[in-house]
Length: 595
Image 1 (cartoon, rainbow, N blue to C red):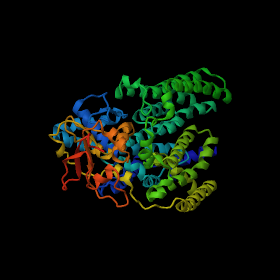
Image 2: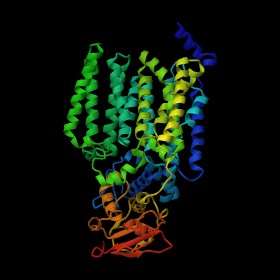
Image 3: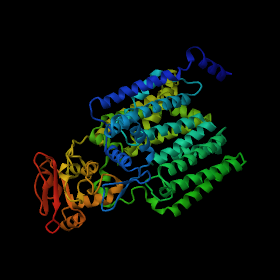
Image 4: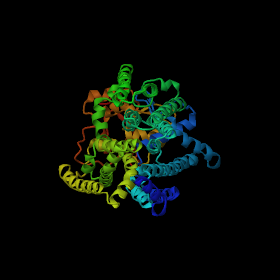
């Protein structure tokens, strides 16, 4: 009776939930304001090499229309570079370009296409986030515009993925993540199907969210084991949506040949087989098993699931070593292990990235503040709330362990801000204690970490210069008219030359894991002090390119890169274009004299 009165009160008088349109406008307004900080100064927080390579991939598609051929033309390591990215992300940019091209020409159409799609994704994100937050709050909660304003103000690391020109796949992944959580929060047949569709599309886009999506996939099954009402229907519809989206989008955006191939770092046969097996197992078990005993239900799901895992390990043993198994140990040491996204959140303290520390701290406070409500909903068997919270918490933990996830957790964790706000404001004593404890822990813990991991002023070493784009505006004119050939260049320079190469010219590597073969040769030529290793690595190449740039005196002048970057010469490198007025230095390799 009391619950009925509370629900009536919620629908009447002061308890009326604001119209969703109000919440959406609040979300969109704050999102635009947050993006303005990223756009107005002309320097984008997230603009990186992924955007550059995605632009190359889209331009080459528009030039060749080889939809299923993801070979990036212009890279010879030796050996071609096959992109792991699907055409799903390319499609909207291609369609926008085709729409605009008759009006403004190819180059302008591409430029605008790269900047018009992100606002659409941002609006979609705002809509889905608001709907999910309202669902999470439940019948006795309410989401106010002030809650939305506060939540969006706390997620700049998510919102900046929607900056115009950010054509990497992470913004679309964020939208798919939110659609997955919205579907689960609905806890219905339609919701399960939507969650399955979005979850599958996320896998086709990229595998970063695989650990979290796995939790979402097994959540309804565990709820069924516990006898939660509606779990059978949600599990069945989720499985159908997952298989439908992965298989259909795999065929459409990857092609059958890649769908049946084994590519451990991209959606392919191992994942398609896993999802098909998952769908068969859960559909059969939740339909056929009639017992209500939780342990028997759990065993009925767990036994075939373990058998499926063993079968996948036998059929695809290469994937047991992870997506980076093919990276040469030297390349891993000199490149991958130096990339911040492979490190824990402690690296933020080392380099002094205050905004990331503050955002993570706020997420921790909200997550801890929501724990009492999570335990309450767990007792109430509110599976939708529980699964969404577990997914959000997993994203936060993964980010603390490996910062590549930094763009994702705020979108999920801040869904619970209205719940925490209402509990604290409404006098829920346990929630108040949890929030206060979290604030104190974050402040004290953060202070302690500044002592344990003190800020280190940036002191560049040789590898920092190798990784940076030292030629900010590459002029490809010196390449015109030269005989076709292979160019050895630092990976960063190679990436920016890639889209400017004349026909017949190729570069050796780009800073991506599938180019590890080319990067190994690049490191051997540019940073090795072993003459034999340099000569062997340079053998397949005709030219060498590097940028002229001032380098700190502390770096010794004993490598090809250090000497050439400082403007010096090296035996066996014949200048082709070496003007003091241009940062780009281009040489022909005389292999007989090269040392």
